[in-house]
View (cartoon, rainbow, N blue to C red):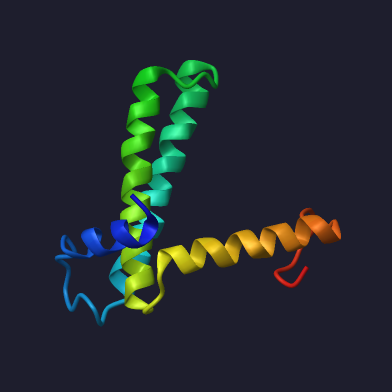
Length: 109
């Protein structure tokens, strides 16, 4: 499955207020789900000495899926395609790598 296919299928499950005209709901959901991923990783550190168990790997897979869903929904609200976002991001990163600016600060490196 590619990102565009995922985004199209995920859209059919977007049952939130004013879907298609509400970027706030998926943006807030993305933040919340990202927080859940971070909380699970915190528990890996606290409870498992930093070792990701098979159980936590599956928990994180599920949470990352939720992050992906909200990302897809937010992109759709902005009329953006996940395939295009992914491609543009790789182009930006490879350009930074070629110019030796992967590290450092600022968006315009």
